[in-house]
Image (cartoon, rainbow, N blue to C red; front, top):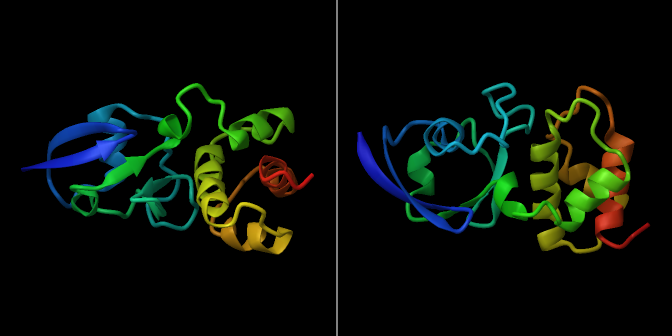
Length: 152
């Protein structure tokens, strides 16, 4: 075990874990932030997307050592009161059905909007292509991203 220091949602966390532990398990099991979901464990579904130093990463395959000294933002830290424009749009448009993939979808969309505040539909589709929704709410997801970006 090694003590690693990671800033998670603005708070410094000292983690005494195996440096190869997936970041997902450090977030969920060690820190107790369960908003980030485990889907496939192979970086294929996007349910586990978090931001590491401002970039979207798949927490299920990212070793916690990569986050050492860095900053991680999870769905809980995107907006502590749930009032991020994407979160509001998700609710207003009734995007989720089962909700399982939604944290990863929102985190991927937030990374897109941080780089491209007014994306086209093609850019939204490309950016979220690696996030799977088993309920098939893709058109509502795209509409919510457009709404959050001010593109009705």
